[in-house]
Image (cartoon, rainbow, N blue to C red; front, side):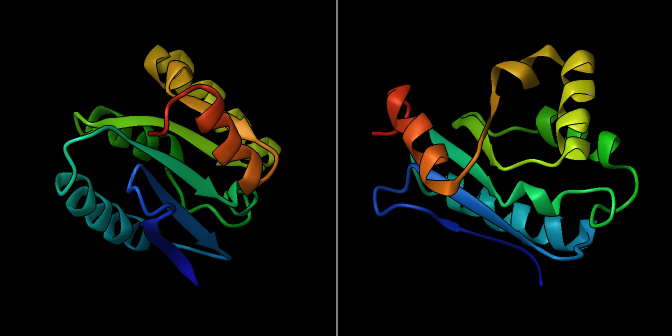
Length: 130
């Protein structure tokens, strides 16, 4: 349960966060800290997939999601690229929409895809993944 992070491809160009059931901000930040370490091991840009974002719903998301999202985006690593969220409940889409109004860079650096394969294809199509 919770939040896990791992490389999604052998080229180490995509980090995938996997959300399962109820999770806490402590679990997210533990995965986030692992991601920061993994990012520091590569000189190239690294992109992110949040999977499945359907688990980021009102029922599963801990309190204060908006403030955490904005704080996380402000601390983005220099080699961090676009994030693609798989699925996405109405709640998660609304959160991203509101966060984008507060910080327009979030809208530029974030997209939704209906499946994991389509998230990967989106990154490849945009020539974001080497």
